[in-house]
Length: 381
Ligand SMILES: Cc1ncc(COP(=O)(O)O)c(C=O)c1O
Image (cartoon, rainbow, N blue to C red; front, side):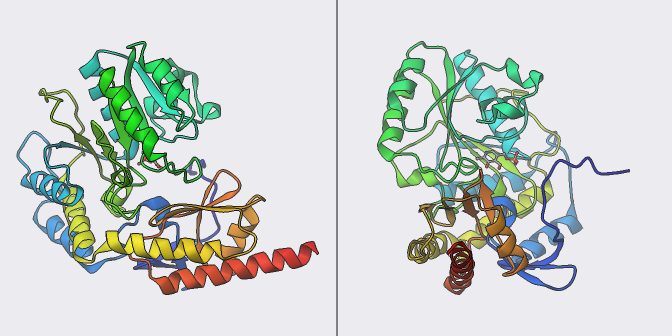
């Protein structure tokens, strides 16, 4: 059977990993500034992570949500400690898109409304409602067009106000930092006004922290750089460091009902063991502070490089914009310098490494980038 090929990919197969490095089938080592798409929070093959999952597998790998699972409570407790959301409750699922679908369902039950307000350049996943609120109209199949969605520019509070005053919007969804859209940080004042508008019109405010959460921004959640306190927060990616797990943090204004949400695999024993280990490592190794410090250092180093148009972001979620498409640059980074990076659109490199990146790794990247740009400029003269 052939694979149903939907992913553009590099001709490299990572088979091993350690910390912020991966190794391919030939033994070649690569610096991982992509983190497997912002997934690797505590890094590859962390001994405590491996041990926790292996230990759990030796006891019980899976049982269903129809019985008790105290690991879910432990995970919720530790998530409370690190995130500061002490009075919120947690629904566990498997992916980011599923977390957002669950958030929309909760918001719609709560308000008895259908419409979702979303922002240009936003990305929220590939399931039906999640892709409908994502700014990718070219990727909508007819079945995804049944959702009621309005989209306005990020930071445009007047447009938000116009829509919310109709009283028809169930929820507004905003990323902590827009990732797919090119690493754009929402304006803090806009978020404050957004919160007030949502409150005044009884609209549910959802922060999608699937990419920007779990310490990546240098705070546990990127919105914690501001005074925003969303009604619902969605998480995934870094939560399991590669083990599929997602979550929805839900404010006390929502009352659970049996059967309101559900999933077979969500919150299973192995996923919880992975999620608990991730939080323990983040705390013990000070990874949030490291992301803030090394991220600042990376921004400084990149700003000193000639040929870069703009550097944006927070912590270890950084966008590096160029005046030209970056496809060739990324190829050279992978094949000549052995550095993985991500991309947003055509002109922005997306940097999303494991949170334990060191300044020496940043130096390697800055030197490689400078060399490639110098060569490119030399060819142009
Ligand atoms: C901000 C954001 N939301 C949602 C998703 C969807 O997550 P998943 O691919 O786990 O469904 C992503 C994935 O890239 C994301 O970056």
